[in-house]
Length: 302
Ligand SMILES: [Zn+2]
Image (cartoon, rainbow, N blue to C red; front, side, top):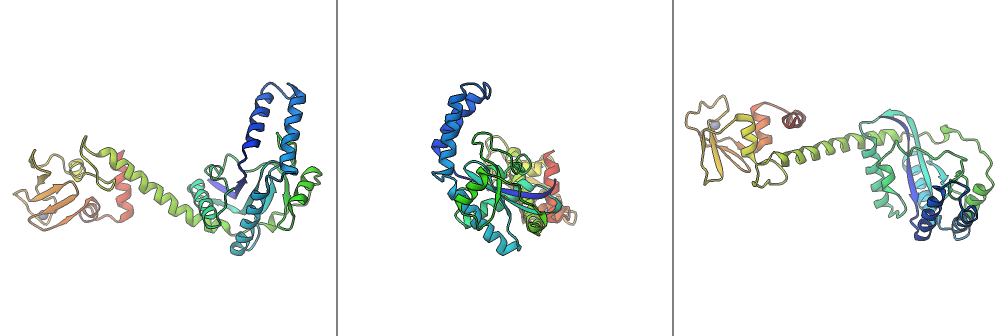
């Protein structure tokens, strides 16, 4: 995934707006002219809530606050756009950059912004798909309110933003003014979050490997199942006991007894005294590092 921008969506949730939107949308299903006077009436109500009742104010204030904080860290404001309805967007621009999973990175970033600055209007559902809603087109009209999507600056107060939206004129927009190194920050989050997602996935997979009825611990393997998949059937089983015995698989232990005991939570060899869990085993037995172990476990699943 290559991206050169991300955006955060600030949106007020408002019951009245939702009601009007629903009615208007269902009328629109039958065409723009269907019950035209009712459609106009609803549109006017919606506009009034935004322009006079100032219902978008909290979203705009929070976006401005975010912009100030963003500038403190990355040197420039993000570009702010009024959405034409009850919210606004903040766009951060950077040089085109490849990400493993930008949705995870932006979601993590947005969640932390929301938490740190106590921002109620930051909409986290949108950031889960960085691609699908990359932008509203500047200077387009919002389909329900007829208000225009316009840029605004930190200094613009609410009335000024609404004035621009009602009487828009196209302003020069230079990307240069907004270009930051934000991608470097996102790339770091991207790596960590992609890694975390993979580990989560492994744990989920391990649950599936467990024997019917046998409980997992910490969401990890029942080691009897794990060793069965690696070493095959044990040399001895004890149906009434919670462990099984293998001939010790370590090459420097020539075991004829079998001394290698595997219980639910790990293994212990009475001969060579090795003990541990599946992770330790893969590290010692196959001489794998952590990253290789993860890969190994994923392959084991497939
Ligand atoms: Zn041993």
